Length: 229
Image 1: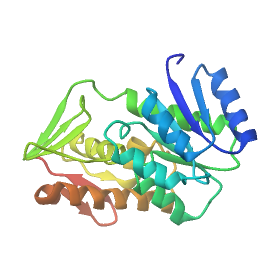
Image 2: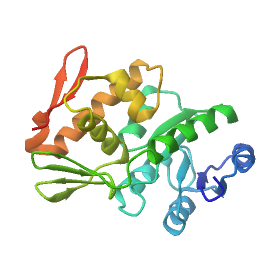
Image 3: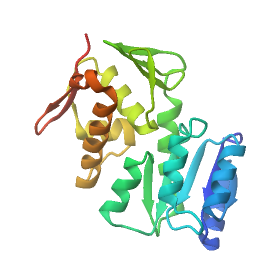
Image 4: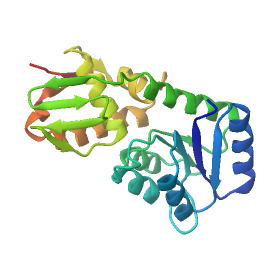
């Protein structure tokens, strides 16, 4: 893990020092910044493995930073874990909807944070280096991390990409929301919030697939199925 770099955007010094200390012990290289604008600059300048992003930041809030990162082709694929003192469902849902890969609510233990980081990195590192999943006019290029519909690139978040990959790879099998949470988010035990998150990501995917959207079939009370050719 010595070559893996994590950007920590956190303005509370005691939390930043604690997180950096524990990540250093695990062999990560940690870049620490304390403001939103400095975080965006660091994300642009450094090759990053993952970003830990506090939501309550000076100058620029974490949700806005997440939105900017996920809209920029250079930083879109970098996984983001939100660190938040906010525990309301709306804040978490909004962050996930913007493309964050996970969230952890303060106060948290270093052990829990490390587990979440490793779970996100496992999901990324187990993807095949070069493979294209196809259905109709849909091409999901796993190597380039690109979605194309009718040969035209479609902007997609990292989480939407992983969700579509899981469904297309299932070859017509029905996947429950809990199964998708395990495959895409790494959650073993789901909550109402997290299952709703799956539904929201499915809604966004359907919008981006346009005429191909009917391939994602909802089985009420069960989950989803992707219909290939």
